[in-house]
Length: 362
Ligand code: ACO
Image 1 (tube, rainbow, N blue to C red):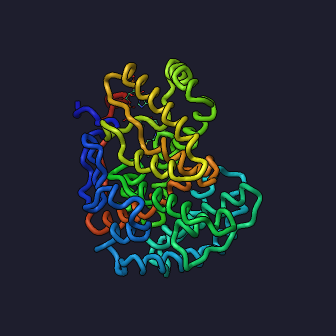
Image 2: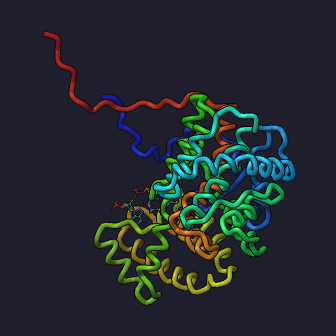
Image 3: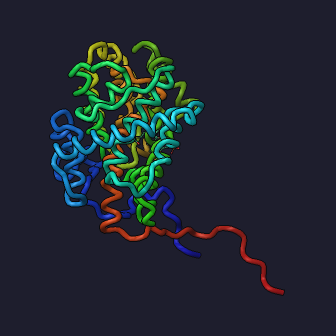
């Protein structure tokens, strides 16, 4: 009998990377030598993309990337218009999957810029289509956060909102070998190309155990309603065997550092205060209940819990939260694809056969 399978691949180290490290015991996220707290709210998304892509592609100053992404966004608008009607009946993340799948793996625009520019252009057009509105053309002179909000709203966003979205995009840009990044690297390892790899990443991100959680977090807040109702509601959900969205993580044994960064970003937004108070009550009750009932594994607040508050305060619709997550994570996926292409080998693990034995020859 071959050795037991590593179901879930816990503790398996499947790649060397210079890009990011998740220290689950200390609750620390390091992105290319910088703690997340040094970057989020201080560096622009473009500057962090430059940090991640450095050494893998030419042209890695913040200004070059800002200009390159702006040009690529502008060039992608016609593609968005052409594909929108086909995406009409899909959920936002399914629509984004359809539109990204239409991108070529080889194009005159450098692939990392193409995919990173495409997500906000497509996601904004999808949100507007959901509201019955025509898409708004990109402004190549703006940064990703400002232009994404402008394309969603059709008006110039206030600086506080741009800062909050930029903070969010940086906070979720990269996170070790999470499920979506691993999926992207597996596809990149076959040399399928950047767009194909990013589509794989998005498909993995879509699930509720990964990037699909923040919309359901808001549904939970709405169902709970008031801080006083939190404990009873959560206890009943756990009695039914449900998982509490926004809690638990494969790697973090302590609080996910991204939760605090995003909690501060949400608290700084007008109208965010009431939700933060409700969220704090839900969080405290949930942590208490999880500690009592799930003693085998420390379950703490994860990034998705406060993501929900930030994106809601920015006026983004909850059904599009996973697509907005992708607008942040895409630069990280692109960096991992570049790294995999430069340094990696085909990823080809084995399975353990537990099916019926072959029939003996007569
Ligand atoms: N609520 C209740 N119980 C939970 C939760 C939760 N959020 N998370 C884990 N558990 C329980 C499991 O039911 C299991 O209990 P059991 O042994 O009694 O069956 C135990 O904790 C261990 O769970 P695993 O499935 O081994 O944990 P795993 O590391 O595979 O899962 C995951 C991690 C998927 C994030 C999980 O904690 C979860 O489902 N959380 C809710 C969804 C969520 O918030 N996803 C976003 C994650 S962050 C991100 O990907 C960007």
